[in-house]
View 1 (cartoon, rainbow, N blue to C red):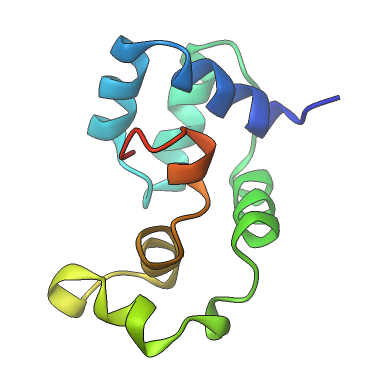
View 2 (view 1 turned 180 degrees about the vertical axis):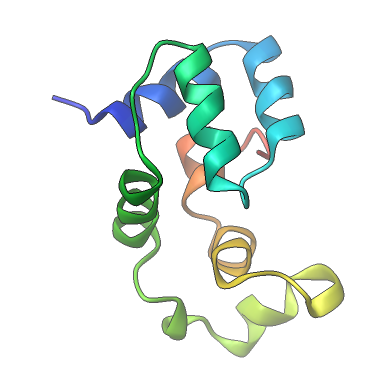
Amino acid sequence: MASQVQSFFDKVNSDAALIAKAKAVGFSDFPKIVDFAKELGFTITTKELEDHFKESLGDAADLSEADLSGVAGGTATALAAAVVGAGAGVTTTTQGSGW
C-alpha cells in the first residue's frame, strides 16, 4: 500500500490544475506542502516528507560536481539540489511535471 505522501504526489500528478498549484506552493517549504496535502484530504507530516525524500534521494552528500553545477544560482538547499541535480524526488514523483 502506498504511503500517504506517495498517494498525495500521485493525486497531484493526476491533475494539471493540481500540478499548477503545486508549482505555486513549491517544494522547499514543507509546512506549505503539508497544508496543501491537507486541502486534498491527506494527512502527512513534515517528518514524513523528509523521510520520503531521504528514501527517494539518498544521501545528498552523494551528489556529483555535475549535479551541483546544475543548480541555478548556487543558493539552493540540499533538497533542491538533489531534486534538480539528481532528477529524483518530487520531479520523479510527479513524472517530470517540473514541480
